[in-house]
Length: 372
Image 1 (spheres, rainbow, N blue to C red):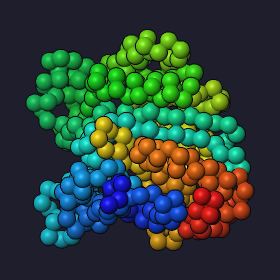
Image 2 (cartoon, rainbow, N blue to C red):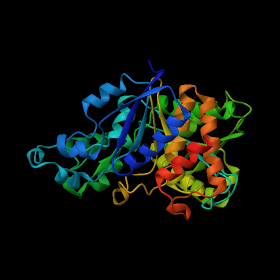
Image 3 (cartoon, one colour):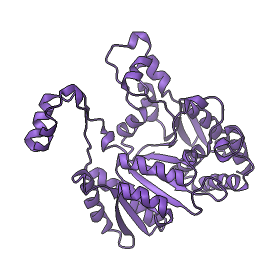
Image 4 (cartoon, rainbow, N blue to C red):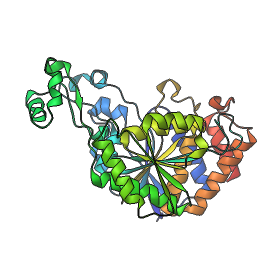
């Protein structure tokens, strides 16, 4: 009987291609795992009006972790138009399956390492090594939204904050509202995770990235909580910065930063910036980590125009698999994988189009597997 059960969730587009590539590498590593296919993504939205079928949720309840490829998402109207005819006009609303996974399984920590590997022609600067901790279940991704804006909600808000009255001259169907919801528990968890990581890996600073001078309550809660948590880690400095300034300073002085921690939306933004500093989304791995389950994925999208061509860079997927190995306790195997990836990048003989080469995803996989 295999030691691990891994849910295998290719998803859509190039997600399938990079999952095919990582399977070559995992087979060479001889991870003692059973890979169990799960249905997820756009095809199941179109045919079932559910991009995350219940059978896949059941699968995840009975596995150790998951590897996930990529999904296609479209806005509300376009998503409804893509449904098969018999499901249209039924009030079905598309919801991102990866967001639902994060919330349903409380995958509260999104961990995104961004490391510049020597020899990568796309590096902004050699030596960048930034880890972003993004709160994963709250904030603007909580899904509490209104359009049209109900009068009863508007009036209730007005009782507590009269500033909403400045929008009274706009009719309900011309107002859309998304609530930014941060909790003390969510803030404490993600900030503690960031400090624990800094402590474990001897990182000297943790930077909390928010906007408390304008978004006073939700960002303020994050910053106040960071100050409380930091007191428990006297050997690690807490730095505070606004999200807009952080983007500027990362471009100017990326070497100054080590561990960043922030809320969901700001984390989504700043982690993509960090990814570009080390080569782009082809090198951007991530882990969605909870207490009982973790889902590992590259942060790029499904890129439908490249689907089935084995053209895109699979290294982000390989690095996500490395994160999975670490999470499973197979740190030695994860180290072997990362070393193999680094050697292939440094040699520069096998490169996908984004790195100036012409090799396929599978050829990159074979090169990394050979180094393993």
